[in-house]
Length: 261
Image (cartoon, rainbow, N blue to C red):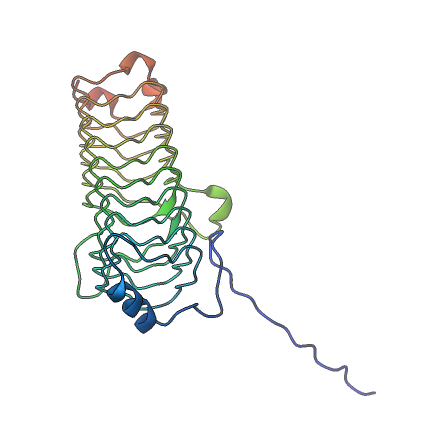
């Protein structure tokens, strides 16, 4: 009896994101650099919807370029200048962003899962000060990062149980500067925010379920309708907050008797 012919199997590896996977970028790194070098400041380069995945664009000055909807999956943006750039609904999953500047950039609706921030010779964290991160999906190690005045309204930075079958990946904002940031209705469940600077932050309606907030400073923050169920509030500073009576789950938070009011 002849053996049955072997079937060919194609294994497709998908990232834990909704971002597209690409078989090849639309430009080489050299072409990107050349286009940016020729561009005038008053007329930023348009890379909207382009595939720039897996390119090494470290130290590149994007000069407020339009990268809306661009695919930057796995792209090396180490020490790149993206200040003021337009990255609306861009895919940055797995991008290398050590030392990159996103200050004032519009990243609204973008996907930023598994950002590479640790490792390599550049130890500086990315700068998101004043950036528009509203509605982003982000999982990243941002301990000590600068997000001062950033707009994170409606952002999804918490654990997604349905898509994490092999352990929980969580966002680390320990010691991060979030002073004056807009975190209204953001999902931060299970994230790490110990000793984070949240002075004057807008946390209205935020999901803080099981968030580690020990030592965090919420002085002057608005916490109306924020959910603190099972959050760790050991040493958390709540001086001069707005909306304390409207906050949810405070009676089920841990360490609340050691918080500073």
